[in-house]
Amino acid sequence: MFFYIEAVDLFNNTAISEIFNYTVFNDNIPPEINAFWISPENPYEFQEIKVYAEVSDNLALKDIYTCYRINGSEWYVIRMSENLSVFMATIPGQPAGTVIDIYVVARDIYGNTIQSQIVTVRVLESTETTSTGFIQPPTNTILLVGILVIAIAGVSIILIRKKRK
Figure 1 (cartoon, one colour):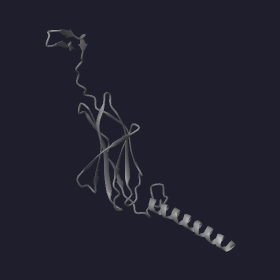
Figure 2 (cartoon, rainbow, N blue to C red; figure 1 turned 135 degrees about the vertical axis):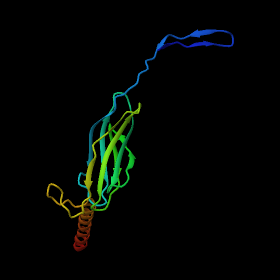
Figure 3 (cartoon, rainbow, N blue to C red; figure 1 turned 90 degrees about the horizontal axis):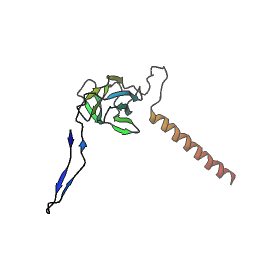
Figure 4 (cartoon, rainbow, N blue to C red; figure 1 turned 90 degrees about the vertical axis):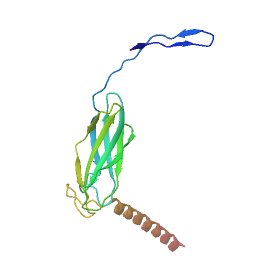
């Protein structure tokens, strides 16, 4: 489409712009989900699950969502936020034994959508082993041990200083 702009003021002065060219087309190419992963892959009870996706489009993305359901119930939808071209959402921690189905949906500015495959995870108890065979303590346990070590070291220093006096 070619067009120009003509303006006329109250005194009949006329100005005409240069000729512009505007191409109208319909995009029917959906976005691409280049990568999709969760962390941790083997969540423990009440541990948040981070969902990550790398998504691209030939023109512009509009919306990226994480969809999840708990134990086969209704689907929940979370809008993903972007950080350095990686989109991220957080699924709240769940009790041990919970089965969570997760997928990502991307939509571009023309409404073209794509859905990732569904990933299913089962929330582990803090004493269960992962597929590698190792027992991973929950994050809270690691934090507690760290605090205890610091507290013991602090008390030891105080006792040593009192003993020297």
